[in-house]
Image (cartoon, rainbow, N blue to C red; front, side, top):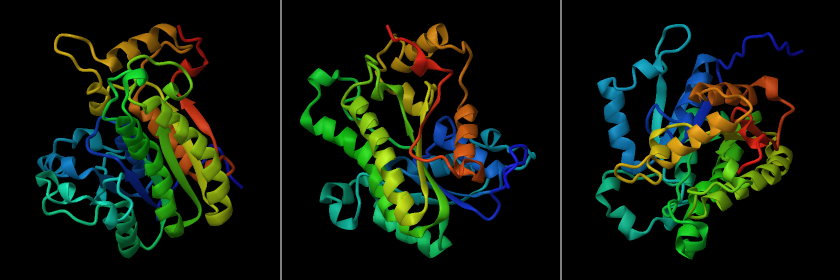
Length: 302
């Protein structure tokens, strides 16, 4: 019997978080929340930023952000290079193989990473999809090219389908798959373009379908968190013009002015919600889009 007051204990559980490259985003906060509960943390990082991330870890750049509730430091057991737009080695074009940002790396397709994790850990309990990319995100949808639109879909939505497809067979029964979405899937958010709003709508629809399919096939749960605006490194790069405020700065101000809860949203708020969804406390919750946004989704956007 589950007691809500029980401290969540994830000791002995393995959690793979795909899409962590620094300590400012939601992926890091989720990793930290799971580590606080005792989970073993393994991470997938986009190859072009892998070296920078590893150097930052070595230098201690993230030490302050790594401190857990008991005063110890979050340990990342292993980092895998992961480019989630490629499902298998055959999908990787020559231009990527020869790209100096990928130099010395291989095994970074979703299929290969899943195999490497299986070889290292056997089974995993938690998989978190914390990645998205829209090369034309600053363009209105009306001006987005087919190539840009499909690239946003591939990196931000299909990558979650593929990740669960390849990781499902090595997930323990009762396991949990979690992704991150955004309110632009259902409300008009000017500035969040390039087909990213469409990709997030796909991701939410796929969450429901995959919850049914993976629930029946692998007995795992599938949910997504619709997170409010956070000034992460990735978000700060959207629409950055010299001397102008970024897209994320406008959205954070809008949220504070209009959301039911006029308070700051911290990455740890999303981390804690993810901890609940990925823990035994959420054992009956699947197919859900959970809003962690100070209630912004309920506001009548204007």
